[in-house]
Length: 252
Ligand SMILES: NC(=O)c1ccc[n+]([C@@H]2O[C@H](COP(=O)([O-])OP(=O)(O)OC[C@H]3O[C@@H](n4cnc5c(N)ncnc54)[C@H](O)[C@@H]3O)[C@@H](O)[C@H]2O)c1
Image: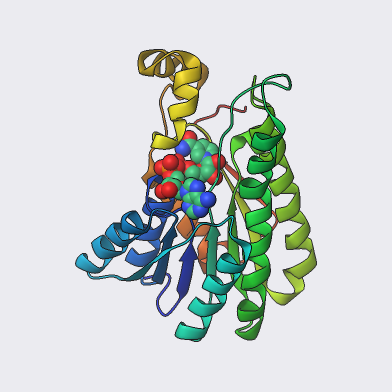
């Protein structure tokens, strides 16, 4: 196993990519702290990991609560004596162009898609430094490396968090604390409901994906989980400041 004796902390892990990543990290031997603002959902994922013979605990955590987020990461590191992996994953997608998006929704996008990653990474530094390194994976999007139509709040914040990830990578590479951005394309999870509505329903979304994505399909959460394991493990030991785009060729 790639992650034996490692401790991982995952946000937004009750559903979709976060949950699949948490399960995959646990399958490789990590103890996973499964967190989500949906506490029962986090407990269900952690319970599933334990039922499968893995090690996990659940925590109800809204990542926009700065003190709670910092305390949860510090507490996990204290309880387990180390923190090796942070997958800072929770995010929000607000649709609309400049004239459609209110200031409150723009602020909410910054709070979740940028600020929460800043607070989480800051809290992870000390425990990672104490054990000589670690891997921080920040979920951006392929919307962090290209522009979507009518997605000003999402594209702006996903670009910003990619810039922040590269900056953190540059600042801490010499301490063996690696920072990489996960940049998925269309992955079939509840996250795309808003875009589905914007497109005019599931059939239209599927037709769009079939025509706009060179590989002609959605990605699966397991295809992203493989990348999470890669970025979390020594398999990517010389990779930092990287934007790992996994999108079936969408942004070619
Ligand atoms: N699914 C995709 O197609 C796709 C593509 C690119 C990027 N992403 C990114 O992946 C992340 C989520 O995608 P997913 O597919 O896993 O979504 P999902 O909807 O399946 O799961 C998101 C989880 O985040 C939790 N969450 C939401 N707000 C939270 C908060 N404030 N604090 C804590 N938890 C919170 C939700 O309860 C939910 O369990 C986002 O950062 C998104 O930008 C998704």
